[in-house]
Each structure stands twice: as C-alpha cells, then as structure tokens.
Length: 246
Image (cartoon, rainbow, N blue to C red; front, side, top):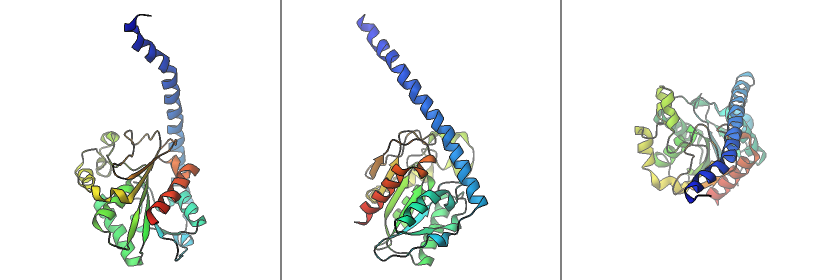
C-alpha cells in the first residue's frame, strides 16, 4: 500500500465504528425525549407533595434541588427518591415553577427560599440550567455554614451552540458568549465547590460539561434527561455529596 494512502485507509477502517456510535447516539436521543415527555406528563398528572421528601436529620445536610429549564422540581423525582431513601432532607424550591426566568431572577428565588426556610449547611443538587443557578448562588449568596457545595448533572457551563436554533430569551442565555455565561464564567473561585457529572453524549450540550477546577465525573451515560434515572448517575451524586461534606 502506498504511504500516501495510509491515512485514507485508517479513516475507512474507522467508519463502521463511527457509524455505530452515531446510530447509538441517535437511539439514545429518541429515548431521551421520550423520557422527558413521560416525566413532564407524570408531574402534571400526579404532582408529588414536596413535604413527603422532608426528612430532617442532624447528621446529614439538607439537599436543595434545582431543576433545568422548563422543568419543575418533580422532573428530578428519581433523584429525590434516591436522596430520601438515603436519609437526606430533600428541599424543593417550588417557587421556581418551570424555571423559565432569567438566571438572576431564578437565583434570587432560590436565595429567598433558603433564607425564609432557615436552611443551613445544605448541598445544591442540580440538573442542566439548575447548575448555572447553583453556581451563581455560590458566587453571590453563599456564606460560612450556608451552602457546602453544588453537584450538577449535564450543566452547560460553557453554553451550547444549539441555543442559536431557538430565538427565545430564556434559551439565548445558553449561547456560549452570552453576557450571563460570560459573567458567570469569571467566578473561578467557586469551581472547587462543584462536582460536575456528565456523560459521553449529551445532545443538548455537544461540548460537554467539563468545568476547569471542579471535581469532574465523566460517565458512560448518554442523553440529557435520561441520566436523571440512571443508577450510575445516582451513585455519582451520592459520592459528590459525600465529597463536598467531608
């Protein structure tokens, strides 16, 4: 074989592997939206009572759930069930509604909820946009004895180019160079208080959720919503809470 043909040959040999990976990702993309629709409907038909997840224990931190955009706290019910089963006092910020407001407005609602509920020594556990709210909480509203740290799942810390496809103000925030993300990205000092969990394929965040200076945990999961119900993610969330509180 001619030496000049070697790169072409290698590329051709990798083609079946790449096609297989693309097919797998497409399958998970479809499953991802099916999961999201099911849990959105579940929250409407059978809205859970947040008080059922209250379990104050002196030896464990309270957990404040922060859902993603257009998600209520009930969308994180698989995580809430996990945390309750492990004896954590789970707090839902129902004031967020579907979390469609600006980062600043939603963060203020979380800060107000924590203050009025008298929550101390808590850990924030967030999905997607909720992680940006959590980071803003750490940067602006934290104080000794208030928030121990933040565990995130599939959070677009660096934004997503796909935000260009939907000309909605709430979505445009996720543009990689949006003013909100640019300002938030300058708060490097809080990264050590963040555990960022993400998978090998997230259709909403092509660039992934790696955050320099944070505790990054990459799993073999796929999807943006599906991982909320994945046992591997659940284990990583529990480990992240332990890391931030010990």
